Length: 77
Image 1 (cartoon, rainbow, N blue to C red):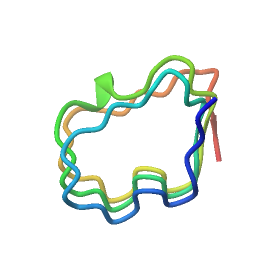
Image 2 (image 1 turned 30 degrees about the vertical axis):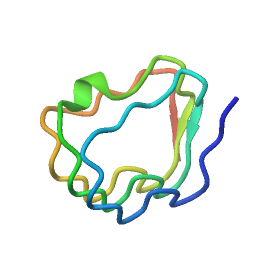
Image 3 (image 1 turned 180 degrees about the vertical axis):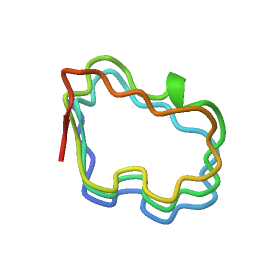
Image 4 (image 1 turned 60 degrees about the vertical axis):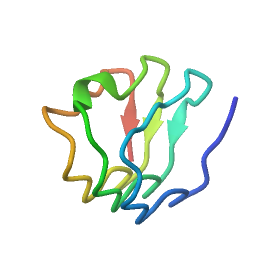
């Protein structure tokens, strides 16, 4: 498993695209918060193997469109 640190990319407004590897199962608190430059559709973001999403993991990510769909098996903290 590959892990992300809390607020790993927080405030990285220059980041435009995001691919989350299938090796990542947990997205920690604030990991991508404030990444306002992210583009694309929320529906293609989360792989099915994500088991937990921390608080404010995607807060203030205003550039993406659609809805962030979270599988029933995911724990949102």
